[in-house]
Amino acid sequence: MHPAYSVIFFTVASGAGLGLMAFMGLGALRFEALPVPFLLTAFGLAFALTVGGLLSSTAHLGRPERAWRAFSQWRSSWLSREGVLSVIALAVAAVFAGLWLFLGLSSAILGIATAVLAMLTVWATGMIYAQIKAVDLWYRWLTPVCYLLFSIAGGMVLFLLVHAVYSGAAGWELSAVAMVALVVAWAVKMYWWAGGDRAPTSTPGTATGLGHLGKVRLLERPHTGSNYLLDEMGYKIGRKHARKLRIIAVGLGAVLPILLILVAIPAPLDVLWLALAAASHLAGMLVERWLFFAEARHAVMTYY
Image (cartoon, rainbow, N blue to C red; front, side):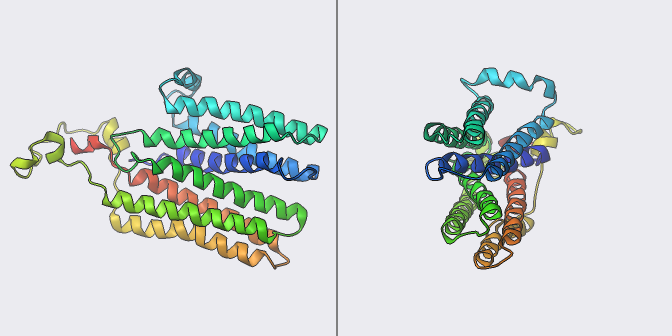
């Protein structure tokens, strides 16, 4: 399918932002007193990424001014549920952050609610694609799991960076959690890729039910000009290029960040290394998310 850059940025930015927001929510269970600059930076970064991603997603709409109507279909649409959950999550997180920042009250209940709502929002984003039966590559339970794990990994890397800025050290414990999160997320993603490569795809024979009679081939194209379906669903990427981009995605999104985190633990310039690790991971996520759309093949293309 044709990769929409606004949606790619939205899913990567909001995923990392919501992941960081979830870790700040869980932080209320462990950290009683954190410096105000730390809280401002962490919450500010989480809100900036989440809200910026959500706003960028409207650029993909034909009529962005009507985006509010999507909220009314929450009973049947995962897109609508994502919108509703994101607003609720941001509202609860704002109250939670405000109490912690201005009154010094780190409410465990609000913290847990913030973390749960943030992860539910990410899950809803993944379900938008996982429930599309016409796209074999997406129609799997692992699709929202990948979204969730990447959000956790990205949020943890950002949390580690902010923590190092104000504590002066990365720390083995947080660094280990971040590295494990990266390994698990990308391992599941590689399993997702492998499953997609093995999955049977729709062919003219299976689509028409005539495959048992022999090879079904196209007699004549439906029409001579292009249309919306061909523009949006007809994007193709060569298998050779897909393999190279997968290697680049894993290298930037997992291997390089883990190496940089390991270097940062004993290094005096740990903040610099962790900043590079976060930037590398987000760059790898952009490549992964571009592939997520570019490799998807809608069943309607069998008709053409």
